Length: 370
Picture 1 (tube, rainbow, N blue to C red):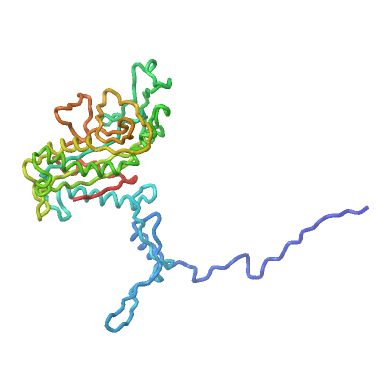
Picture 2: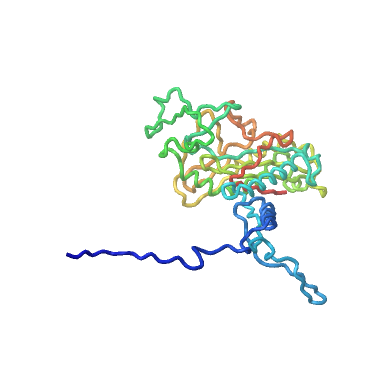
């Protein structure tokens, strides 16, 4: 009778030990640590810094002699870290915060003076305008009255009032700031996704045409020609575009009027006041429209009766009626007086920075024109 088996031999340990041995060259000194801290501070604790490698050499043009000035080999790791400068908070919170503070100072200087701008600009006609898209269908929203959160869409007749698809479009919930339902349609079949996409696609062109039409309507209301308006007036603005919770772009703009002089910051003639600018903004916004060839029929659910939305900005198809519009930027002329329940999104600015809500760090794009 025999028995068979397998045996595993244990290999001996290598003579130099179980692994690599640390040497004196691998030890980080206090001076190296201070260099790392200095480079980290120079990037503003950027999340994704740009790594540069190279050197700077100064050349004497007379003699041709070259002298080294800087080499990244002297930096920790042999590279120089530079802040990425991304304005999106989701990508780099540190660089986004720097951009937000810079934008705040820039807008504040345009309202109250500073940074080379005289303080007299605070007396110039200035309007804060919000241009937003209409309702493409009911969505969940967070409504506030002071510091009190109001119900989303309360309806007394919620049992009887339903959308054409039989879904309840009421919501008594007081949504929190981070509620994932914010911006979601209450009925996916009622929400006009195609119209929302078209509005976002042509938002830049709509704004560009708005800036073209604004001087024309301002001249017409002032009773002067366009040539005279350009000789007397200069329209300056700062604009921020951002996404709403429903995923549609809207614009915030501060528009200021200056006299067209070499000094650059002289008050405009008395006929150009904030009320006239508000009327011109409303007329220009309603006059802007864009034709989208081959877009097909696009429609959106009518807005609630309590919210007056005339058709200022529109994206239309050649064979159909207007599709897209935005609420007016400021009060309309007396010939088109809105109901008392209408909401106006523009107002003259008479005080300083407190009237400007600031810029968003979630990806705004601000443009200065003057």
